[in-house]
Image (cartoon, rainbow, N blue to C red; front, side):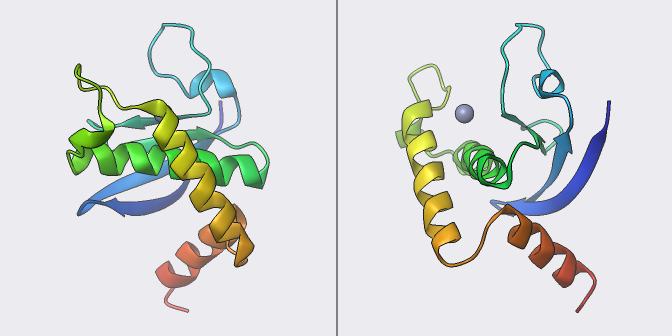
Length: 122
Ligand SMILES: [Zn+2]
C-alpha cells in the first residue's frame, strides 16, 4: 500500500490532512465492501482519496471537503434526519465547483502546487 500526504486544508477552523492512496480498496476504512473514491474521517481529521485522473481527483477532493464543511459546520440543511449527509447535492456542488475552478485554470495539480508554494514560502 502506498499512501501519500498531499496537503493539509483548513475545514471550519480545523486542520484536515489530505492523503491519496494508490489502491481504491484502501479508501474505505470499514469492512462493508463499498468501493469509494474518497472518504472523510471526522475523528482523525483526514480526507483519503484514490488518485485517479486529475479531473476525477479534484471532484473527489471537493466532494470530501464539502462533507468536512457540512459535518464540522453542522449544516443540517444538507443532512438527512439520521444525520448522514445528502449525497446528491454534495456531488452536484462538487462537480459544479470543479468545473468552475478548472475553467479558470485551477485543477487538482494547480491546487497541490499552490499549497506547496505557500508552504515553502515562495
Ligand atoms: Zn459523499
